[in-house]
Length: 147
Image (cartoon, rainbow, N blue to C red; front, side, top):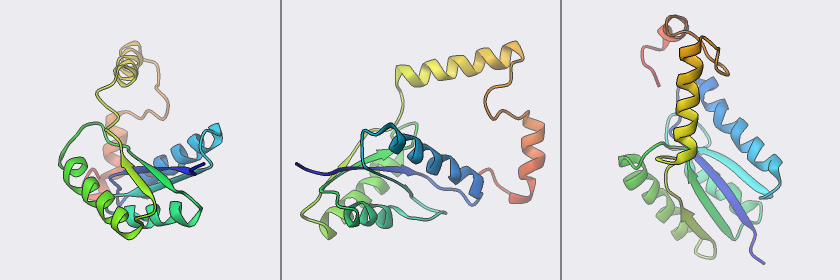
Protein backbone atom coordinates (compact mmCIF):
# COMPACT_ATOMS: atom_id res chain seq x y z
CA UNK A 1 0.00 0.00 0.00
CA UNK A 2 1.44 3.41 -0.94
CA UNK A 3 2.40 5.85 1.79
CA UNK A 4 0.76 9.16 0.91
CA UNK A 5 2.15 12.45 2.19
CA UNK A 6 0.67 15.94 2.10
CA UNK A 7 3.00 18.78 1.17
CA UNK A 8 1.32 22.14 1.93
CA UNK A 9 2.86 24.92 -0.14
CA UNK A 10 2.50 28.64 0.56
CA UNK A 11 4.18 31.62 -1.04
CA UNK A 12 6.36 32.50 1.95
CA UNK A 13 7.05 35.79 3.67
CA UNK A 14 10.00 37.64 5.17
CA UNK A 15 7.75 38.04 8.22
CA UNK A 16 8.15 34.81 10.21
CA UNK A 17 4.74 34.96 11.98
CA UNK A 18 3.05 34.89 8.56
CA UNK A 19 4.88 31.66 7.77
CA UNK A 20 3.91 30.17 11.12
CA UNK A 21 0.29 30.00 9.89
CA UNK A 22 1.28 27.31 7.38
CA UNK A 23 3.24 25.33 9.96
CA UNK A 24 0.23 25.45 12.29
CA UNK A 25 -2.07 24.34 9.48
CA UNK A 26 0.28 21.42 8.74
CA UNK A 27 0.22 20.42 12.41
CA UNK A 28 -3.58 20.63 12.44
CA UNK A 29 -3.93 18.55 9.27
CA UNK A 30 -1.50 15.97 10.67
CA UNK A 31 -3.48 15.91 13.91
CA UNK A 32 -6.61 14.86 12.05
CA UNK A 33 -4.91 11.52 11.41
CA UNK A 34 -5.80 11.16 7.73
CA UNK A 35 -2.14 11.30 6.64
CA UNK A 36 0.92 10.21 8.61
CA UNK A 37 3.23 12.59 6.74
CA UNK A 38 2.28 16.27 6.50
CA UNK A 39 4.95 18.84 5.69
CA UNK A 40 4.95 22.59 5.05
CA UNK A 41 7.04 24.27 2.35
CA UNK A 42 7.38 27.67 0.72
CA UNK A 43 7.82 28.90 -2.83
CA UNK A 44 10.18 31.68 -1.78
CA UNK A 45 11.29 33.95 1.07
CA UNK A 46 11.07 31.20 3.73
CA UNK A 47 12.33 27.72 4.55
CA UNK A 48 11.94 24.93 3.87
CA UNK A 49 11.59 25.47 0.15
CA UNK A 50 9.46 23.14 -1.98
CA UNK A 51 12.40 20.93 -2.96
CA UNK A 52 13.37 20.39 0.68
CA UNK A 53 9.75 19.79 1.70
CA UNK A 54 9.31 17.19 -1.04
CA UNK A 55 12.61 15.54 -0.15
CA UNK A 56 11.51 15.38 3.49
CA UNK A 57 8.29 13.59 2.49
CA UNK A 58 10.35 11.01 0.60
CA UNK A 59 12.80 10.64 3.52
CA UNK A 60 9.83 9.88 5.79
CA UNK A 61 8.71 7.08 3.48
CA UNK A 62 6.24 8.67 1.09
CA UNK A 63 5.68 6.92 -2.22
CA UNK A 64 3.03 9.45 -3.20
CA UNK A 65 3.06 13.19 -2.40
CA UNK A 66 -0.05 15.35 -2.63
CA UNK A 67 1.19 18.89 -3.26
CA UNK A 68 -1.55 21.16 -1.88
CA UNK A 69 -1.14 24.82 -2.82
CA UNK A 70 -2.08 27.19 0.00
CA UNK A 71 -2.97 29.73 -2.70
CA UNK A 72 -6.34 31.31 -3.45
CA UNK A 73 -6.21 31.24 -7.24
CA UNK A 74 -4.41 29.79 -10.25
CA UNK A 75 -1.93 32.58 -10.81
CA UNK A 76 1.51 32.44 -12.37
CA UNK A 77 3.09 30.93 -9.26
CA UNK A 78 0.79 27.93 -9.38
CA UNK A 79 0.79 27.51 -13.15
CA UNK A 80 4.52 28.07 -13.70
CA UNK A 81 6.48 27.84 -10.47
CA UNK A 82 4.69 25.07 -8.59
CA UNK A 83 4.40 22.99 -11.76
CA UNK A 84 8.15 23.38 -12.31
CA UNK A 85 8.82 22.41 -8.68
CA UNK A 86 6.66 19.32 -9.08
CA UNK A 87 8.45 18.34 -12.28
CA UNK A 88 11.85 18.83 -10.62
CA UNK A 89 10.86 16.70 -7.62
CA UNK A 90 9.49 14.02 -9.96
CA UNK A 91 12.77 13.88 -11.87
CA UNK A 92 14.79 13.59 -8.63
CA UNK A 93 12.47 10.93 -7.18
CA UNK A 94 11.12 8.93 -10.16
CA UNK A 95 9.88 6.17 -7.86
CA UNK A 96 7.55 8.62 -6.08
CA UNK A 97 4.33 10.06 -7.51
CA UNK A 98 3.98 13.84 -7.06
CA UNK A 99 0.46 15.21 -7.63
CA UNK A 100 -0.06 19.00 -7.73
CA UNK A 101 -3.55 20.04 -6.67
CA UNK A 102 -5.61 23.12 -7.49
CA UNK A 103 -5.67 26.33 -5.44
CA UNK A 104 -8.02 26.68 -2.48
CA UNK A 105 -10.41 28.90 -4.37
CA UNK A 106 -12.81 29.44 -5.79
CA UNK A 107 -14.65 27.06 -3.51
CA UNK A 108 -17.98 27.25 -1.67
CA UNK A 109 -16.22 26.73 1.69
CA UNK A 110 -13.92 29.68 1.02
CA UNK A 111 -16.88 31.80 -0.07
CA UNK A 112 -18.62 30.86 3.17
CA UNK A 113 -15.56 31.95 5.15
CA UNK A 114 -15.41 35.29 3.29
CA UNK A 115 -19.10 35.91 3.98
CA UNK A 116 -18.61 35.04 7.66
CA UNK A 117 -15.64 37.42 7.98
CA UNK A 118 -17.67 40.19 6.34
CA UNK A 119 -20.55 39.51 8.74
CA UNK A 120 -18.17 39.65 11.72
CA UNK A 121 -16.64 42.90 10.51
CA UNK A 122 -20.06 44.43 9.83
CA UNK A 123 -21.42 43.45 13.25
CA UNK A 124 -18.37 44.70 15.12
CA UNK A 125 -17.34 41.20 16.20
CA UNK A 126 -13.66 40.53 16.25
CA UNK A 127 -12.81 37.74 13.86
CA UNK A 128 -10.16 35.28 15.00
CA UNK A 129 -6.76 36.99 15.07
CA UNK A 130 -8.35 40.20 13.78
CA UNK A 131 -6.61 43.52 14.16
CA UNK A 132 -7.85 46.89 12.89
CA UNK A 133 -6.09 47.99 9.71
CA UNK A 134 -4.40 50.94 11.46
CA UNK A 135 -2.88 48.56 14.00
CA UNK A 136 -1.69 46.25 11.24
CA UNK A 137 -0.09 49.11 9.30
CA UNK A 138 1.73 50.30 12.42
CA UNK A 139 2.80 46.78 13.39
CA UNK A 140 4.31 46.01 9.97
CA UNK A 141 5.58 49.44 8.93
CA UNK A 142 9.17 48.38 9.60
CA UNK A 143 8.95 45.74 6.86
CA UNK A 144 8.54 48.23 4.07
CA UNK A 145 6.21 45.82 2.26
CA UNK A 146 3.13 43.73 2.92
CA UNK A 147 4.70 40.31 2.24
